[in-house]
Length: 350
Image (cartoon, rainbow, N blue to C red; front, top):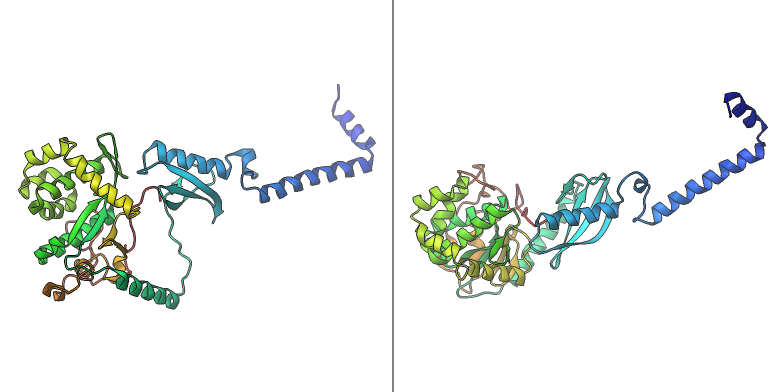
């Protein structure tokens, strides 16, 4: 049996060249591992101790699909590394999104904001060019239609609805030319929405009011977006609750109405709430004044062959508050189209 003295004796008896050869072999092995890890993203040193980037990507897709966070099943496009995180490119329907996960695979970030300094002159120039292209490419009509695709519990969907409701309040005839549509999918006779069952129920409730009690739609929406009080708002705005309940429970009514919205959202490749479609053309609200009641009026008026007189009416140019809010705007100051939450939206798993 070896003891400590025997070990020392053996070490002394080892040939110096043998030791050097052993060290060289170890170095070659380590170098080979590093070269292979750098050239093959499916394998990296962390795989020895934890999950690989590919495994993390697979887990992200499984999490999204298992929790029904997407309207249609998500699939993995690729994984890569970005700023110390695992960048996971996801495909949902025809759209691709980038999400991010921590290297230990425990935390998922549906989206990320790039805070790198931008060249403001170049950005403004591009924005101006996009604005001009968008406005001139819209098909004109004697009776235009501005469709706003939203989900009922998205902070930015609520923001757009708030701006639209305020526009209709001040120019009632605008209601003929703007319409809120909803994003979702149907499983059996059940509506599915990106933020869960409560949102799906509210989507269906609003769809039924829109279709069967249109005179109550905008007052109901304007009420419930203050705090999400559906029952109280049904009562205070005079919604016929029995008629509403019948619509919701009858799949030939409520679900059928919803399917028309969902089919249109698929047609236009809608992937975020809100998405604006004017006369069948995707538009950027920032080109028309942003998510304000005056911006809504400007978007609708951009679709006319000959603009009606109400298009010269000046409405609120302040950006509407996002999420639930008791007031139209979180700030009394005028907001530019590119400030605050302008451009932000809710999208499945992004």
